[in-house]
Length: 227
Figure: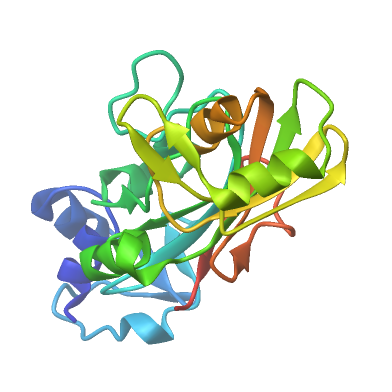
């Protein structure tokens, strides 16, 4: 991959802007200045990328996969309505790159969310037919017992679309904390299911998405992963 194309793909500006950065010795890869636009770059061998002496996140090519620990009061949208976008948590240059969240989390929901530029991967892990499990920690308004878990696993009627939906798993960590796994991704699904079962969600945190988690990340932190 030519250096100029690589720098553009990193979201560092237009072709003209990236050419200027290269011509003015602003680009360093693995500690070495690169000032020839036609230099051949192997993205898999880029360990550090610096622009004008400042190291930035080198985005893997051609596809990248990100785990983000979503904080509360952020929207899973490029065009947020009320709260900041989760994409505002990334460095400036990455905001210029086309990337999409894998599914959505409500603004007040925290926890793991995947972000990628790989459309096929996005479709595969969000498609109901693949039944990718998603584990949530649900803080309940009212104390519950195993009856709630049984009701959720047997299936509840979602009144908005007259459809019965069942949890793949539901267990209580304590009377006000429900650990619930679903394999679908309907609108407000957890909140609607718990409401249909006679309780209410006070707080919602997604612990796992498939085999991935964000246990090592603080809220707002992210990292690249390999798939």
